[in-house]
Image (cartoon, rainbow, N blue to C red; front, side, top):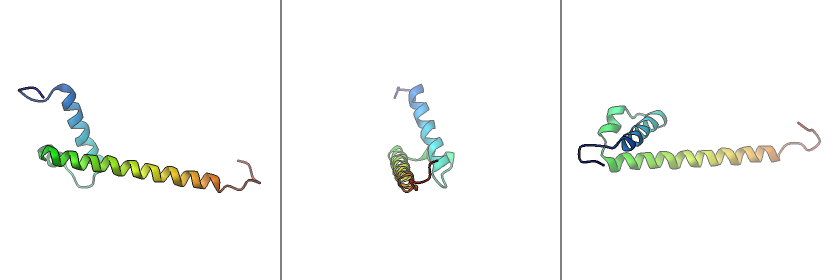
Length: 76
């Protein structure tokens, strides 16, 4: 962080977090997230990332189970 504000790279990261928390997180507004203390915003962002990873793993597991349960007599 520069003396007079955020670097361009840091701004991109900040706005990316804001977008993702607004888009995937329920109930946050832009001003809520922008004015939120950094430690709290990072906490919510990390929880969101963790939750989405778990959801994706569960989806992959379910897809693999459904593929393995296909009837071998019938080809797709």
